[in-house]
Image 1: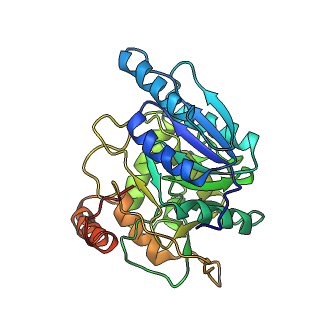
Image 2: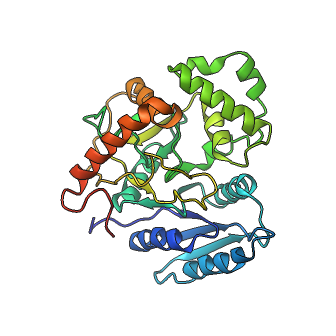
Image 3: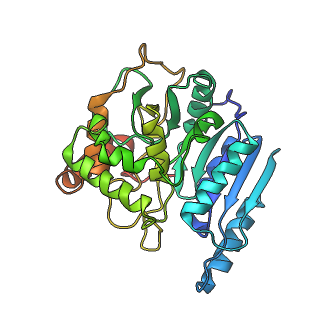
Length: 317
């Protein structure tokens, strides 16, 4: 890593969690991006503790101590996850052509930045590719001889993309009724339980029952027939699962998945075909609940021992 120099901008999405924000910021500091675009939501009404927490988060950003252009997009009042994230990413991709994106609870392995940078360059003009994922939900299964594989899933716990992709995002999911009524999800999802779950989630997002932004982004990529890139190793750990989290609550096997180093030079796939077997496994781990939760917890425990045999699955900074 000593000869690597990050030249891509990093977008950092923050709110009111100084503890996780500080940990993710330290990894950004190690990478030393030349441009840091920070999107922050404002304190929620009726939550007096938010003002102090949001202020502490913004103080962390003010501690940048490397040669870096800092661009801030701060909300004075709370906009909510759906509006703040989508409008913030609109601003990011209006400002720059491509970016590496991290939320305040997505802790990257140091090699995540080089992996993103090299693939942003390689696939910049390939309109078949929507985003570069940082997460891998395979838990050691479905390994590949290459550094990454092609997937239909956009995993937004640490990712990178281009303006050409994001400009197609439709936060209102205007085409959802046609896709729903035509049963088009059957062309993408192999597992009935996953189709049922995502149909329900897409419908709730379309009806504004859930204040999120990521299901709309996944849907926008799917209706355009795009592939994503998923690393052979998990490069980002979501450390934000907690009772006070907006969306990542509960005892999930996807919480704090250990990260592992990406080896360089990258070994690129020789063909650009979706890995359906790996995607089917992701459907079971992330989008189909009960049966596989126990299985995945066992796989996660085993992966943690392989990653940190002496200290267990927690990644040490």
